[in-house]
Image (cartoon, rainbow, N blue to C red):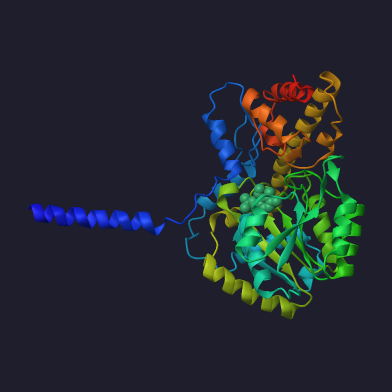
Length: 426
Ligand SMILES: Cc1ncc(COP(=O)(O)O)c(C=O)c1O
């Protein structure tokens, strides 16, 4: 009996030893900063706490919002017993990818009518970025180092996504802290000095994290510089419709670049504009110069996708397809988008008014109304951001970025007053 016990304990001991040694060299990674912020906010018991880190829409009651049009589409799905749970094709639901391409490139797009577009359903915008990056890593005709030019700053995940597939991120100047606006000269000189054929990631609209977008005139100059140097445009579009409230308006830069004949791809997400965050609905569109090239691209994207996710998920793609293909639902969706974009724009106006007309907060706050989309770069220092969190229980990233969605009629006054005090150094 004793020897049996010894046997068991030595067996268990050796197992413990093994597992503790196996991962000994794995360093502890820091938690994701945004998810860490949300956890700290949740743990805070202060009644007036405000979460301005959140990257998802909240209604005026600070609640997630299921779009009414999405609820309708879900009812249709529920009432269609013929729908099964079979696998989708590797490149996704064909009706979805077709409708998604029309939405972002425009149904009158020449690239679409000339069948030069390869569209693949992806795991939301992140998956589209990843698949696009992986494809470039394997097949882009790199002349030197595998590098991607990213705006400084950019969505933090971009760095990791490209590093994961062996592409080194390089920064290009984008945000100018002095003007709290676009460093257009810096951006342009980077386009001009980068080696010919470089890959540039461009935020199609509502730049994350700054909320600073080029004007149409500036986009036109950017396109010329890209064409001149034979660069490749990697468009990331996570906020179509969310920026201005108008789907076509927010896709303007992408369509303009396609018309100009820039070599490019587009990452598309339905997380924000359809409020389908967790359903992971997105697409990657690669625009080629011929139908034949598009077919070859499709064949390779299929191979890559197959080894990674086999085939994409059905549910969210079905919802979006119903909305995009039914004129009445599509109109309703546009109204839902206007509700979300309108609330954000309204928060910008209110915050601006509070800071300027009521509190007379020192400094220029024009950028609050000039910036676009969910996020705003306030221009405050990391130290001031820290004080807002520690003293006033207002949670935001150290770079001073706030999500306008975290503001509502009950929090905006408290936020403006706290920001005013912090700026004054009270
Ligand atoms: C610039 C940008 N790209 C891509 C994404 C990807 O989002 P998702 O994977 O949820 O579609 C986001 C989300 O915040 C983003 O801000």
